[in-house]
Image (tube, rainbow, N blue to C red; front, side, top):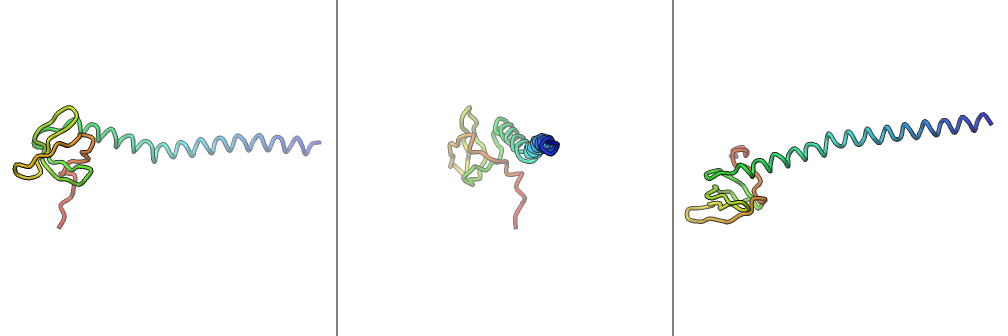
Length: 103
């Protein structure tokens, strides 16, 4: 009978340690995966809202250009002399100044 009581206490302790371990895994996952992604999304949204005429940008498709006009939902990007593309703001990924110069 004493052995059964011991097993019941061990099982109860095992449940608590399992719950603590799962909680720790979630906390680590949050700080290494979820939080940095949220921070990156906020930074990208801030960048898109601060676009202005003359900014050099890159689109999701890899098109490099200079912003010539900014509207609520889209921007006009000049990719060559007298060539302007209307691009949705959500397709703008970064500023060209973030890209290191290649050889």
